[in-house]
Length: 306
Ligand code: SF4
Image (cartoon, rainbow, N blue to C red; front, top):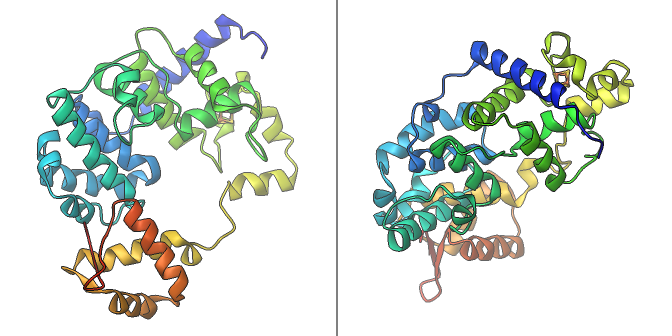
């Protein structure tokens, strides 16, 4: 990868930070440095849009105001509170993570990325996000916004295929991070990606770093096909209603309001929503059990939250 001019880096940093000064979004997880609250926000935001996370974040913190409260709660309550956020496995992993923090670390969070990565359910992104957003560490984070901006600035359009691995993008992100400003820089890129360099309609005409952007000339000269690809994003072809994820969500929705249900009745409820074969139903149940999201009582042939 070619050497990047340090002067160019400094101008990009200055312009994005000054854009951020004027356009920063007011988000509740930015009004705290409490690592527990940052953890909750980051896990929720991983696969769910900000608008959907906002009310759930406050609600979740009212139900589980501290890492100890979460660790001591029954996992079924945590799964119930996760309703509406999707990817429910995150609730189980968060619960396990809180128990490890309480049992093994006396309820306190480390500021070290490698120590945070040892916690259940905490991947490299979340570990780095806690280190920077809670402890102000100068570490680069690589969420979808950061990844897209860095790719476009230094490598060009990320479609139809990314031109670099995450490892390379992370090293570019480290190089771009202004020393001593890890917190605001990482937040700035989040907002820049959400409001300016968006995945489908980047506002290149008013972008403050347009002159340094490798993707800009490509976007200008893009064929109609490339623009269609950009607008369409990377959405999968499978309809959500046909996916296992859809059925997993519906099964949990039903179990959230029931103590326990006979297996056959649960299947009947699901079939009121959408057809589902017995073999696929059993496979989905097995997967939910493996993920710690349900308990199956073999003797009574009933299903319930764990
Ligand atoms: Fe993104 Fe366009 Fe700005 Fe490049 S010029 S960083 S693609 S908004």
